[in-house]
Amino acid sequence: MAYVQIEADERMEEGPERLQFQSFLGTDARQANQESTASRGYFSDRPKSSGFWQLEYYQPYFDVDTKMVIKRCYTTLLPHTSNYLSAHLTPSADLYGPFWTLTTLIFALFLSSSLASSIAAYLTDPKNSSAAVLEYDFGLLSTAVALVYSYGIGVPVVLWLALRYMGVGEWSVIEAVAVWGYGMFVWIPVAFLNINPFPLARWILTGIAFLVSGWFLVANVYPVLATADAKPVRLIIILLVALHVVVAFCFQVLFFGYYPLKELGPKDPIPPPQATATGKP
Image (cartoon, rainbow, N blue to C red; front, side, top):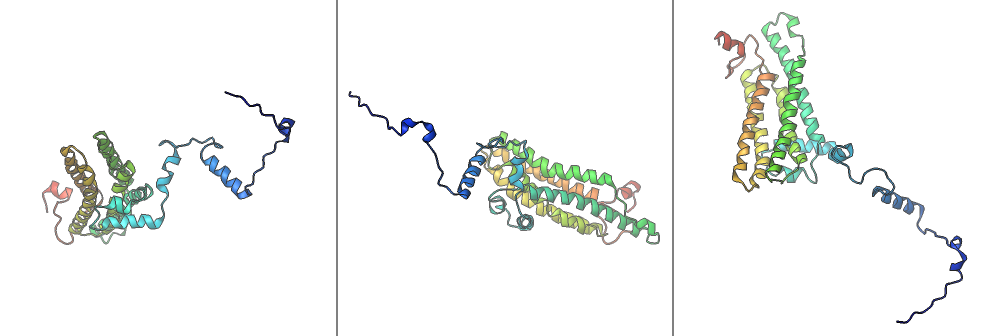
């Protein structure tokens, strides 16, 4: 093997001070390049990826506009909602809409119940104007918070964890919470419609809300359960339906079950608590 000696260039021997580097990029291009490099973590102390305990992790799930949230709410009332995940929660599900849907439902239950109690007091004694004074039972507000958040957030999270443990990973926990949150939208208008003084009408409205929201949940949850290899996993839908019945019954009894002294319209299918105790119709 032969070695060839290459003489160094005299200009290179003059030292590094003669070497100059010049960027031919414009000012805007250099700035964009620095921002792009900083976004990759080279010029930032922030971690490259945010953990679930950081606010930056949840920021994309609140990046929705009002028009999109309203559309995702009213489409839950349509009968053909079995493809809600793919048709309306794309490209990604959000937490902004479900959070405000559940929160609005809490205040709707509280306000409608308080107003209905005032109406019941007036119908009981129309001559006594003080009986119609609107009174707020803040115990009902605490009950509404516990009931709505536990069902609208706790149940989908527990279900998602259970399905992950069983190896069913067809949806994310964000999608699970979004389905439950948006599925409870129908209860908001029903809460205000149930201010009416007719007990049977309130039961009918509650039944309609139960069927609409229940059908929406079954139509979107059962396909996920059906992807499991173990067939008994599909039976979880029975437990979810039973839980939905309990929640609807709690809404009716706790927030829509006021009874004036003088009964209006057809009789209530379930007698009021006082009538049951006294044995009178």
